[in-house]
Image 1 (cartoon, rainbow, N blue to C red):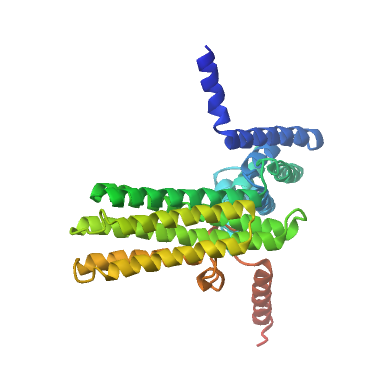
Image 2: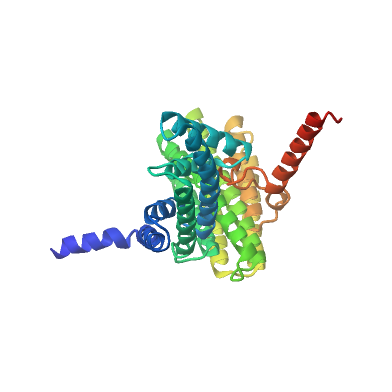
Length: 398
């Protein structure tokens, strides 16, 4: 019985973040229902639905989702009342509502989230008993649900956006170092195509984590712009560290690909090559040291020393490889030398000295994930020009 109890408790203690999020979401939806029913006639259900749809794992995302719900409800309510007033509630009204809402969302350049919310909230509005007052009540309920979601989302995480970004960078850095260590051990003991294929698969998994890291770093950066609890300069520096770990992940995956290609091609002198294994170990150790400095907010000079040592190690490896120029297959030698280049780029990412990190703009959040794909000011200018052009046509002016 005690064993079963411990296993049950462990199921929740091992998933503390998830448990916290679903608990907060449940409490938020219940609160939205209570407040909605208290202050708005029959507003509890709509408020709870909107709250459950809007609450996300972070304050930034909940604000974004809540805004999408508000915009969607405002447009949906207007379109729904118009179509129901003309066609009455039925097949034509429902089909026309969804069609017109989608057209309006497209015309306003709403993002994917808000574009979905527009027809959904419109259908909620034209539910049984639709009228002008009912539509207003449901609109107010939507505002309540979105507002409650925004408030409760602050408690979805125990850490701040900055803390979550640091944790994500640390985890990915540790994973990179672990993979490099695994590859080093395989190289020194001798590896084959199957083993190197597993390394490459792990490298691909790391690549898939980059969009999540970028979104988290972007959240921390934007959160610091309006929150007095965070320093904007610290968030900007952490964002660059996130970009640096992205570059590191790509280089580690490329190393895994080079080792795999060498195993497939045959005449793999890198298998059992101790100098290469040592260089990979040093690279993994350097990444771990950089992660420790980020966690401890240590002096940048210490990170510079780590990067300098790694560059020195890569040059020593290059010298060893050039000594083998007349003894080994040239294609395999080129692959080995490419690993030296990967180590150099990792060193550039460690001390964040590469222009590729700061001088090249990193893409932000995908356009389709934004609430407004086009800036509202730009939209206003476009619509103003269209209206002026239309008025000129109607009045016969050129």
